[in-house]
Image (cartoon, rainbow, N blue to C red; front, side, top):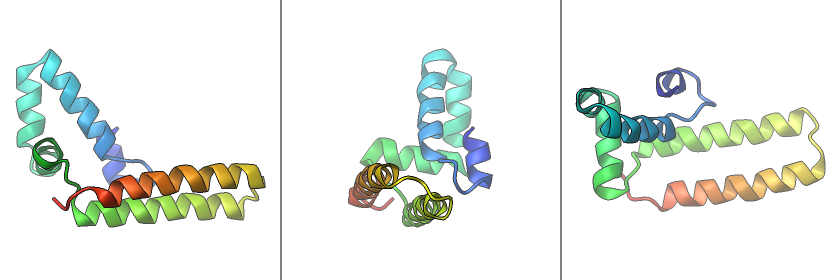
Length: 103
């Protein structure tokens, strides 16, 4: 799922990477070492594990994806209560993302 998330802008990458790392660490040292040493995924995982950090490019991509999802809901005519719930939840997510240190 993380690999698909790299390609598709609306699918998150980092949460799937963190889950994969957790499960790999508990199931296979070889797979854990592979994902940690991966050229693309490894640095993001290490940034998070060592500092709780998210890279600025990932923050911008997440913000763009969140804005796209909300705009899509608006364009599809989602009910007002759904838009309010989305706005509250997505604002919380953005607050969390942007409050993390830069990786």
